[in-house]
Image: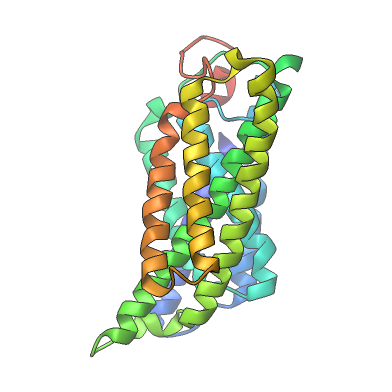
Length: 276
């Protein structure tokens, strides 16, 4: 847990740095923000590796781990696209979201309940399917933040007295273009996850409940519809941003019944050695 604490502190520091520089009217140096997120990512990776080594599986056994894994994947995607788009402005929103998520996780210790979940050969593909699916949620989280940024910039431009804070936000066209790229990445990851999971479904339906399968397919279809509507220009601008936000919230709510089988059952197992 020490690694997780350190990463959380670094993300809070990134948030404070962005807010102070924005308030002073000075731009945030892209490289400085990038390095701070990179260090936080390294410590978060250390936590997930430590956790996975104990449970001998991808750490997705409780809400704490799922949120941490989504945060990790979101930061990773941001670090990968950062040098390409130089989205310094996005660092503020990512840091804010990570701080909010970590605050909720620490405020409710029950979200990190111990569980008995050891990997065995028959569940290897299930683990890969689940990890890939949750990884796609990291991309969708970034797309959600871009939608929020788009709406803030859109409202600022349409207002008679725009706030000086929004002058730092990227142009609407750039926000929409990057949002589309990340949406494609997230959808492809989720689609591949369902494709891999389908093998387990057809060979051993007992390993994956039909409820989980239906919810996963529904989320995938929602994002497919969003992507098709955007590519065909049937859904653009603020309507695309609003629907992106709604679908992401629906996808997050759908994670509640999608926890791994048996992961929610408290047990005095080796998994508790990391959670304490």
